[in-house]
Image 1 (spheres, helix red, strand yellow):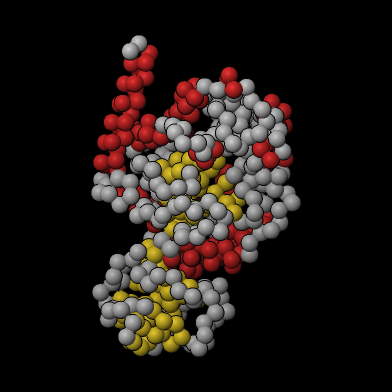
Image 2 (image 1 turned 90 degrees about the vertical axis):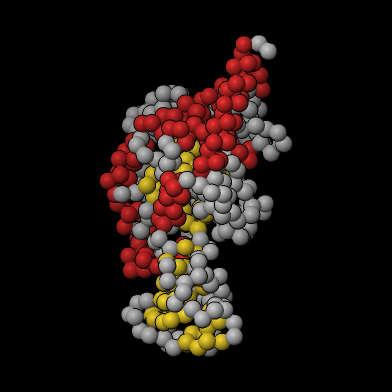
Length: 447
């Protein structure tokens, strides 16, 4: 073969070998993993609650992050938005302090969404927050510093697809005609890897890279070359987790499994029909209203108590809860979102110990709610109405030693039955989550 073809062949061969070594060491779905990989996955699971931020020049149109696609906007016209993007009220320290007070322990920020605009001072393209806008400041750099100060882990969303670059081979999502002669996968793939190298080199430790967009090419055989890309990430930052919102079961050395707009095992949004729940850490990402990016007409916000129930239920299903906010174009967070974060923060300040560091309890979800578990402590979260002043725990072995109200340690009566335990409740306070603490004699493993 010619020199160029031989080089390409060897490059892919070495990448495949690198992936094989990573799979041996890092595992994929319940395989043996090395201690560092196991540790960072467990630390991720311990954090339980994160904030998702969808922010870019699309916020200026105030109609969500897919507006370029939905309105069939030509990329050359859309890119002119950058010339007016000046988030004068953005304060990274104000944001992260609010997130911390809300009880979040990590932040996932959209470094580059499908519109192709980069929210950091990348050298790989001038189409970025520093070079293309009058703002001239590195949003990501400011956020990374503020996250470190607040002790929040920073995760970075990165889009695999791009509606702006001419070299990206357009998939089904962008309907404006493109010059197919300009498609150049090798060029685009190299561009992505240059950007990922910047992100993992210039902004300190990154907790995870959160990929999205593979579903843009539904045809069989489209090679995203994930093995090389994943190997690059692990080479640059071995403790950086990898997740991919491809709406399928985990691939290769991915470290956690994502569920969009649904809890694990559900498929109300239509994105999780082909997913099987793996042994990897799980994460559910969800919007506060119906939009990811800022949408000025979308006031369909979920109630604060509803969001708390979803967070607690996610924990009971052994998943983290990643709650989205779409910041305004001026850099402020929507008032409705701030109000809900403060409401969640009040709950987590009192009850966070029943969520952080737990796993889904040994009692699976019931009609009354869910359980979380930490060692021999089983936290019973009563989220729904209870009939007859009692609940039933399907524990088939004699493991229950004591049951108390979490709020005030009041002891509760319980009775052993053939298939578990019946717990007798006092008149419960009207609260979003009435929590009981059960002490197990020989604690079974959480799920």
